[in-house]
Length: 409
Image (cartoon, rainbow, N blue to C red; front, side, top):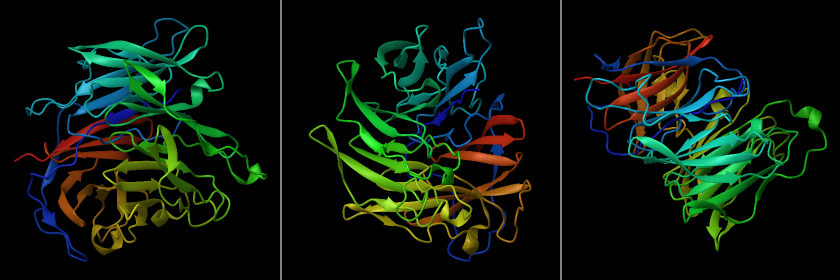
């Protein structure tokens, strides 16, 4: 079945909760605060179409959560996928509501959804009866979503293998295909002007020359290798199949807008060894770049860079899990929040009973508390410091669900 997307919007701000600083090798303090399950749990069907796509993205504290979920088909020609938007409530009564969506559900047969940071602009992928592929843009007007623009895509795009990326301000859009070692890939960008999408610059090549020996690449497919800064003036693009340091070592390039064209803005950062697949996904937030790789070396599968002197500087030892965290169980897309087991434990693939929440703030890892774990795999997490909430995307065999935890006084 088709993939779906989940997007959580938050903004970086001063944490207004009691926290414990965990310097290097500090033991866990006594009486660590327990974050409680809070509000409803959204459950949805298991899918295997796309295991590599991020389901949760963090952008701001507005508390909008978007889901492309399965829905009862109206007839045999209707692919049962619908974009549903939820609003987190901060009154202590409800966080997520299964039925009361923000506005009506939007049919999204492409299984792709993007939201801006304010949660009032949404883009979805659509295919008409005559097989024309388009990006639909919807604005939240009162309590309803209204379709305001239709952007038709070039016929070379394959409906089942397209992804979108919307800048936080909602004014810059990237359209690009899923990438593997056998495909050519380009990123097309658009700027929202006069209530419509207009082409922004030339297409940016990601992989325009196929490798000579494609048998060495495997069949991995990646969807999240493009991201923007907040206003869409800077773009990062990963290519997990670049060959600078061996087959599929990978790379990430940075571009900036100059006279409405994308120009290289810094030195390219590269994967370190063959089959590193560096750049399989990228997240750009507040001049911090986090790059995900896909290799057999877990310690090399997340790298964080700071923007320094107009180039990316790798932050070696950023996590140091063996020093004070214990084994890392899950990392947020922006690499600022971590769930880990106790320092003295190793999970060996089992389900830990408790997970500790750490947050990176001003160069220091802070222990915020712990949760009672109810899932074998917490795929993604998003922290809302202002409201003291942690939203998790959990997967346990054939069940998938979103669970929110809250630090309650």
